[in-house]
Image (tube, rainbow, N blue to C red):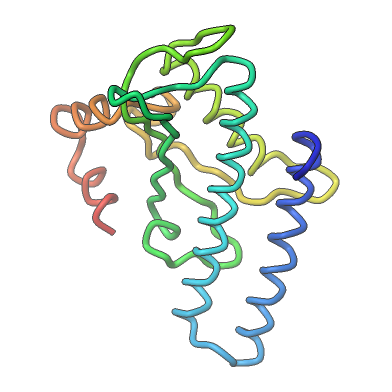
Length: 181
């Protein structure tokens, strides 16, 4: 319900701070084992990422149109979490390792059309800003994108087909193992 991106960023930072205080209290007071604390921290991150993604994609759809898959259904970017978040082991100081993907290529439908690669790159960049930019209330999470295909030189978001092609032909063993954790 926030009016603009700055309000969304502030609301997410306040939510994370309040929930992390609750989770930390349970940890300090010995009210939950570490596995539960890590799982709750990870679930909070998942919820915040999903909320931020919905806001960012909806905002960009207003400008560039809506992306659809080959079945003519609205397509939403998929966020894969690797590392500690992917394993539901997020702790109080962890960064989040993310890979962004989308189902099908194509062009958005709207007043100002955009290729899906371009559209989802914009979604990815804006999502990183909403989560990771430091404002007067701090940041939500530090976002690490170096585990994406071709590392920091690779595209911010890839189609499922491009991801599969990368891991089949270029992916190193440790990159494939990162998905298993």
